[in-house]
Length: 128
Ligand code: GCU
Image (tube, rainbow, N blue to C red):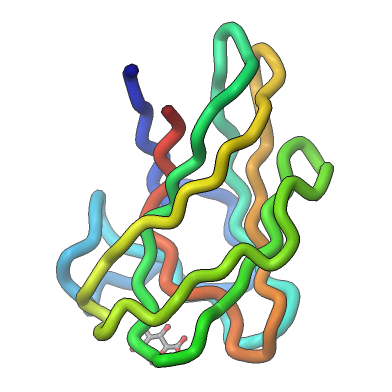
């Protein structure tokens, strides 16, 4: 089916910066969140009909330690501590998928860092 990409650098960023020093990203850069518990990135997405959808988060994690994120949809926790494993290098971008249910129209997708290491570098959210 069709898929829509929402760049992280265009999302709401609670605590972090947009950077572009690690090549391989989509769009104009990625979000480097603060290394702490609690920073989040929130995308506002649109689903005309609502219903089942797959979220795909593009990211890089140049460490060997997972940087789990809580994923909420419209303020409701959809997945506790979704794993974002090391990708081998900050220039290696992979994606993690999560099936969710969307409401018709606007939806807020928020990912929140759950460890002191913060979030991985977040590149985009694909909604398909
Ligand atoms: C390095 C890397 C950053 C990354 C950071 C981190 O500084 O260059 O892009 O965000 O590590 O550990 O979060």
